[in-house]
Amino acid sequence: MKFTRKVLCVCLCLILLSGCNTVKLKTFKKSALPHVTLNFCWIGEENPITKAVLKEVADKSNLNIDLNFKWLSTDDYYKNIEDTLTNSATPIDAFIVGGSDDPNGLSYAKLARKGELLDLTTLFPANCSNIIKNLTKDDLDAIKVKGRIYAIPSISPITNSDGIIVREDLMKKYNLSDINSLDDLGVYLADVAKDEKGIVPLTTIPFDTSFYARLYGYAVLDNYTSIVYKYDDPKMKLIPWEDTDAFRDVMTKLTGWIKKGYLMSPQENTLTEAAAYFNSYNYVEKDSTMDFAFNGGSVAVHTYLFGKDLPLIKLNPIATVSDNGGIAISSRSKNAVRTLKFLNWVQGSKDNDNLLVYGRPGKDYTLVNGQMSYPSNEMLYLLWNSSPFKNINYELDKTSVNTLNSRLEYAPSKGFFPDYFQMQDAANARSDTFSKNLYHALYQGSLKGADINTIRAYIKSAAGTDTLITNLQAQLNDFLNSK
Image (tube, rainbow, N blue to C red; front, side):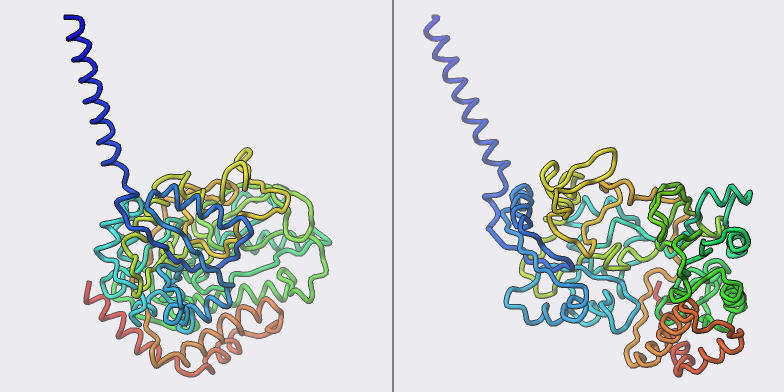
């Protein structure tokens, strides 16, 4: 009887062990997938240890892949990415894209219209659940070109709301509690200019029309041409920025500050300390301590956002390559599904994302009290000059992360991508007039003493504005009617 029981026990164990082995074979996915190499193109520069990290990333993904990253400088990327997609001996599977308004630049919508990007409308949600769960319907609507999705958006939202960073000691000295407008900033700058010898009041101004337009109830159609519409206008009638009362008020303030010495051009500024400067893409007010401007010493500062009663305009989730670029898949890729599965794996956990973005913890970087430090060569395992995998929820370096603001929202024209085909000369002329010849001229001091009428006449000299307004309004009307 005992012998029989032993035999039965042995047989039962063998059956269970055999079953366990069967289960393991069924859950081991890597062998079920044919091996492929995924070829990606990014802006950046690899280091000697980059390939070792990428091998670890590929192995941990359990997708039976190798990763081949092609790196280009920023200039080469903008100049050569289309040629690389078309003529590369090794076909590119995925690459970073931006939503640049510049019709000459690397525009996500432009590449989609040219047929360079794979339509991901169905493939993206089917293969990227870890990314989709972080996106809203508004996020997806904002990236559609003619109703279709052609890239994976960033999970790192940014705004057009430049924050003004000021010294807290000077705010307390002059009994100022808040800066919410250009007028408030003017009061602070006047106090500094009057009493603080050896300190330049303001070192920068925003170069984007969108910053100023928001404060007066306008939204820009795009920053490239500085064409705006009233935020609360359901028909979105387009207006040249220089034809608004808001423009006149902004220029009056800025030229006044220059005349009073609040804003010094780089040529005039021989001082070593500053009282305030603007910082782009802020969406939360915060206190911090930093090496302020040029003075080389640490001081307590505060970032204030203007227009606390106004929405914070959330930029397209495929906006700037450097801060929140999207990832597109080439229409020539033979590995689209595997590429999407890899991107989904990256965003599946903080460990996965940080391994790819920062490298191996304890070896390629260390993290102490929310601040990162690197080995003696002071380099990441690679030098990212773009942000294809940035996820605000996974950031390790807490000094670079802002908490999302509840007032973040897209502009009413979200999802509209202007098509400048046959209008590039007119668009370029307006862009040069504003970004290069107006805002930069104010900053450089070459418009010192100019009155508003002179500035408006100068802008009006750029040919093609009427044609742009007519054409873009027709495109916008068609977009609104299709919704």
